[in-house]
Amino acid sequence: MHLQESGQMYLETIYILTSKRQDVRSIDVCEYMGYSKPSVSRAVNLLKNGGFLNVDRDGYLTLTEEGREVAEKMYERHRILTSLLMRLGVGEETAAEDACKIEHVISDESFEAIKKHLSE
Image (cartoon, rainbow, N blue to C red; front, side):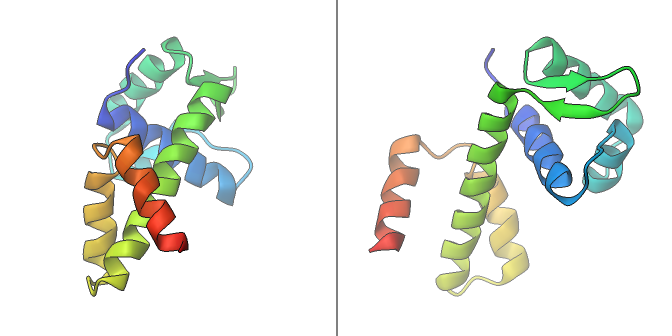
């Protein structure tokens, strides 16, 4: 299943929330992202049906292996691109906003080149 940008953002959000607390539910995603309960519920069902997310009987969300891979990839891109933009003189808030946009469209090849350049 090909994930749209919004699906990637949901997975990244669940990944971030999971790193901060053990149990994550849809309401936590709503609060973090500022989205409505119906929007998050629809996204959670799509991600669950796509094999990216598990939801237990109590409503707790856990990423599948595939979901975790996507989330980690997006989170790494976000962190590195934010850092790069800030090194270039962009303010932290703008850098984070722009990194969020770029992380979903940049090719693997270009991102790996950026990572390599930054590590030199």
